[in-house]
Image (cartoon, rainbow, N blue to C red):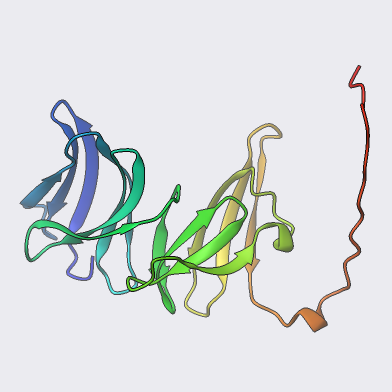
Amino acid sequence: DAQGNIYAYANTNGGERVYVYDPQGTALFELESTGDSWVSDLATGANGQVVALCYDNGSRMIKYIDVAGKAWGKNLALNINNIYNGGGEYDLYYNNSDTVYGLNPEDSQGTALFSWLDCNIDSTNGLAFAALEDGSFLCITQDYEAGSGEIARITAQDASTLPQKQELALATFNIDSS
């Protein structure tokens, strides 16, 4: 976080816990997930505050960690599968299927930033990405079946400067795969 604290989460016999340590490694406090809930991921917001993506009683939410209060802070209910560190004009980023969104704490929904398909990247492969200071994104893909991957840098461009795409529609009926 902005103060240099270290965060970790683990599934213990007592349930899911987030552990917070100072920069020297001294334990500051721990937070416990209660009931039917668990922590899926941690990310650092653009302002340096750490958040947890949690599954809580059947719904997904982002829970901000209040270091001063040594407690869970604000909750934001979003049906998302992952979160990424913030930067630039957005506090956090998330990827939901084919689209990357930027999220700020006052938003209840993210802002769609780009589609992986529009960038010619197969979103069904493993994806990891990071926002860069210039507003572009660095992403890494992994094709598990082919045993290969790629690194791509995504930058916003005026659509009129890009080559024209042609969209083809294909219709079929009763294709036999044998």
